[in-house]
Amino acid sequence: MNYSRRNFIKGTGALVLGGMALSGKAASFLSNMEHHPVGLQLFTFFGIIDEDVKGTLGKIAGIGYKELESAFSKKGGYYGMKPKEFKATVNDLGMSWTSHHVLGAPFKLPPGAKMPAGADGKPMVLPPVLNLRDNMQQVVDEVAEGGVKYLVCANSPTATLEEIKSTIEVLNKTGEAAKKAGIQFAYHNHDMEFHAVDGKVPYDLLLSETDANNVKMELDLAWAVKAGKNPVEMFKEHPGRFPLWHVKDLDASRQNIQPVGGGTIDFKPIFAAAKSAGMKHFFVEHDMPKDAFASITASMGYLKEKLMV
Image 1: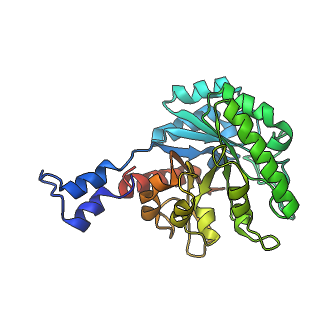
Image 2 (image 1 turned 120 degrees about the horizontal axis):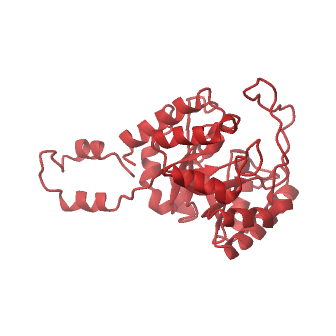
């Protein structure tokens, strides 16, 4: 997974496809590679999946995705289902429900932003969306009921020092509650957490002022790169803190999301550092793609061919 075997063979000359034995060094390298099933963050299908939940999940499974991370649904709950029902639906399709995203605070559109249009062309109307500040125990209990291993805060306010302090309190409380329920809690970043607030970087505070065991990080690689961060260096600075990743690509302008392998991010050194990160699961994601199925198919092709996942 960490490095293309094809490129390894070409680059080192240590292997011969005709059946020669691996050199000791090459064998050691390959033995350290871990296989991780390819996961998908269902936000990729926001506004689409609710039109046909089971049909959409079936097509996702058909492309080869094995793990799912759920997100918000305009049907409410877990795409209109109770936790156990959603879990059974996913399992019946040969996939596992690994992680769930939840807001850290009540949902608010950014200033000037509008809800995206649904399939009918009208702005989406969401049911009340649970959040950790107000509904933490309910969320933890539901995720535990569904047998999900990870609960992730999708985002939380960090625009002011007061917001950062409040977010840290919510994260620590949720981390404790999740631990009691046998769930690992984590925080998912965008690029905003890397923008200094009164001389302090929110992400640095989130790392240093939350419990490192109870609050892990789901590193969105593309958002981190957009913010000017080097994921490999982050792994070195905080080894084992990043058990979950979001994997998507960016074009040269760093403004437009692309399918994995369709942009400019060099994923090979990042995946090569998976052990340092403590990565256990990764999820392909593409925010608001023009064609979600085309995007996740292209991403799967790249991951299988170039990264040998």
